[in-house]
Image (cartoon, rainbow, N blue to C red; front, side, top):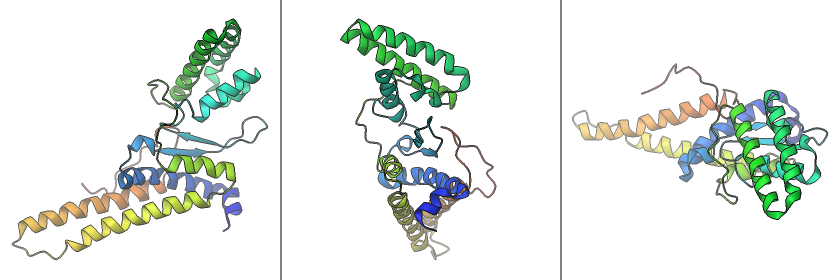
Length: 239
């Protein structure tokens, strides 16, 4: 299946979203990143008639350079709140419209007032967006944060219209993680029965290997929802 056909397949997109989520955890472990910086979920509704594709990401949507604030700036500059309404629930639309109208009015009072009005609107929008997804709002994050390689690659893929580079990034990371965990577990097998120390070292390598494979499989076969992945059973879990 070529890249165009892949993107046009609903089932393939669902599978890809799950794989992207799984790889976020894998990349966090492999690259020493904070897991919150690599948990991301792919969603693809159009915004109005623009057909813009969005990446919904924990640690991404609350940044000053994130997609929510970028669209908020565009809404204020153009005077059209519809740029941001898709980011909030229907029940929050009235509050966003009021905050938007207030910001538009206050911005006319001067540069300092404009800066304060914009900031308040950004915070209101991001807070309601995250609340709608079941995530807490801990304030706007500064621009230029290191989000790791996955989120920027996912955003760039939507701009380019090709998922190939993201697929390679994730495939390489998962392959490296699998081989490393497998090698650690495999190399410590076959210890002497009376060598308890070696036996414990073998188990210390075996358990992470099984957990790693288990986590990848569960995440790759379970659809991602909003900021918090759907909880699934622990059948077959190895403690």
